[in-house]
Image (cartoon, rainbow, N blue to C red; front, side):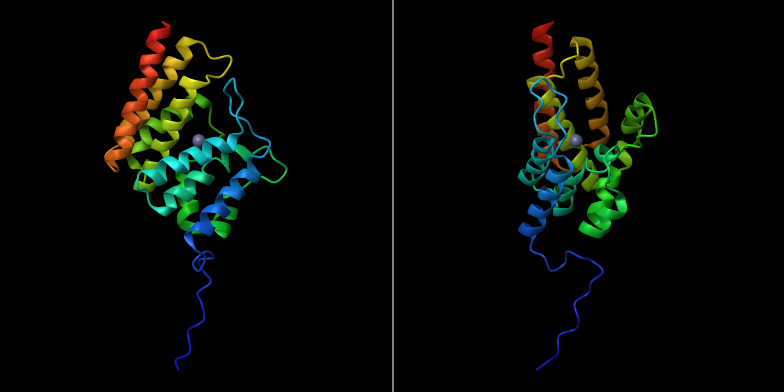
Length: 200
Ligand code: ZN
């Protein structure tokens, strides 16, 4: 009988089944976002957003690293004021370099002013990896839905219109990887524009 070689431990999640990895990432995100709420008037728990992003990705044939990164995509950006902020290194340790890398690609540099970050998202969209492009597109789909269904209390018509236009400019650089996701973005974008036009 052959001896099995010792299991490689460089990728901590190699022997873990996909379903278990998925639920571990969902649980991790739920803990990080436990006290976070969406900006919308209904103030949904923030974890609803990351679950929706991951669900959109899974429903459109995205690879596993994109789905896991979808669950984790706001854990670094949104825990910066927490007592124990989530770092890139922590995500590498917990979920491996591939998933952590996709999250890093979807994380804004919060040391930059908001307008600069928004301009960078437009400029850098086309340079992202395929997994990060899909994740960012699913993120924009979820955000456009939220703007239409439950806009943040202080956001007037002009601000929402500006947001939708900006999301469209970012998405232009993300498309071409996953046609089904592109089509869902287009439908969501059209719906958001139509709703705003009705209000005007
Ligand atoms: Zn997000």
